[in-house]
Image (cartoon, rainbow, N blue to C red):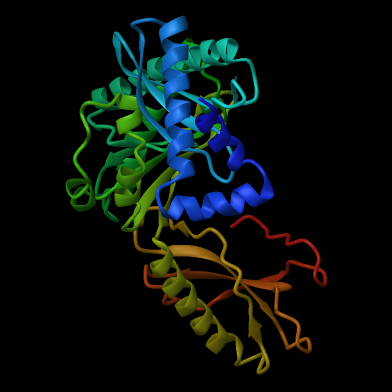
Amino acid sequence: MNGSSGARRFGAGPTGALMCAVALVLGGCGVLSTKQDRRFAETLADEHYPGTLEVIEAHKLFPQASGSEVSFSVAGDPDAVVRIRVDAEAGTCNTHPCRQALDDAVERGRSEAARLRILIRTFRSCGHEVIGVDPSSGAPWIVASPTNATVTRVLGDIGSCVRRWAEADARIGGTARARGASVNIASPAVARRRPAARTSRPTAMRLSETRLLAALQSRPYFVASYSASHGRIDTGGSARIVQPFESRQRFAATVRAAVRDQLRVSHPNVRVSEFQGVWRLEPGTVDRLTGYVLYCERSDGGKRCLGDRAVVVTTDVRGEPVGPVREAGKVREGRGPLRLPPL
């Protein structure tokens, strides 16, 4: 017992943190503390929810010096996952008394599972299987391959489904969709290559696994966004493309170079800003993007160009403009806040 608590104290102070970092390389104190937290969580579950909660995994909280996040499955609910932060050394859960924290976590896990079932059932009834869920926004991932000829219809179909989802979610107390919603759309090819689901895990955990979401985001994908008015979803929607980091950097570099060449005709000393805003798809297309490029008419000594003027540019998916840039005028005073007009 003394050795275990000593190991926890060893990792708490500044010197201990340094030594613990060395120990981690050798498989030391971080693993030990996580094992202690897992055992602590198992004891809590056995005491307060006997036969109901079973620990699935525990992982170290970073950059905190102590504590772990522990995930439980729930007997009788294959969709629910209960997550709680525990610190065995302090005897607390997320710095609070553990009984109340565990009760709150169980209630939250069951509520989220009920809402997840509504999401899955609603989209399935619309002909879309939910293959992933963003854990921060709650946005579902579905599979589709819109084209210029079909994108308007596809957005409308998905929008009708989103409205039904929002209405069903509201009936059990959900409020987030009243402000609007978004849906991530993976291509069939990317969906086929996603990692196999770990069927032993709760649905809520499977659909938000890091490796799954990383695979879905590894190639360009569409995001369909739907606004809401007075709590009712507008089914029309709009779409944008999200690209992996390297592709996004290539796109931005191509756009900046092309805009610089066009602007140099009237502004020989032009400097183009590295600002990267949101590029939206032109209505009725999946291969025409419109966004802003900021620039400075001339160099300001050695200062970096933030961009006090802007042009509107429409490009192909590689970043090559498909027409002349359109001047948007002054969008910033000096190095003050940016004020871009709506596209």
